[in-house]
Length: 227
Image 1 (cartoon, rainbow, N blue to C red):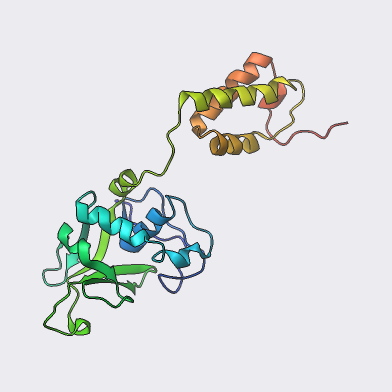
Image 2 (cartoon, helix red, strand yellow):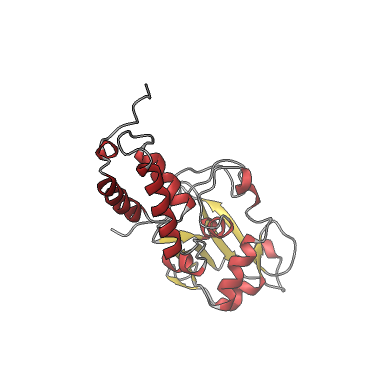
């Protein structure tokens, strides 16, 4: 079964000042989650920063990619009820509904299973905007394409891995007979400070323990208290 885009925690409005979370490897993202992902640099939000998702040009950055054809958004045509690609030229004049300007307006409406579904209404200069029916609903973007277009993760290098190996080697090598740190704590630091993968850390963890004969470090649990 294809994995659906879903929010782990849902709050009352798109500009909620509460906890905001979403899947980081979803098959696709709804437009709101995609906008948050772009603005949050690919990280899950845990603060009131979610309240500013449209105040810091995050939406504009995403819409520009859609307009340039660097990304494709699809939506359900309200007449045919078929999902189709939204023409890229539409995004040049797209804006959020709260703003007051001529153009194609984006609105977020609550859905039964939680979260918000985006709908896009084309501007009609001959009709009051609020009387025009949305052209597309359920707007979403392919997850892999979005992550590739806004690749926020720094690339790991051989230098990073070398520094991590030296760092871990110094810690274990300085106390081979007595474990001084928890493995999980060191792993967390390595992934954050040296941008290495978990697989790389586990590999050098084993190698360094064998190199120093530090068998105590291979035992599970926290370090024993010093005497």
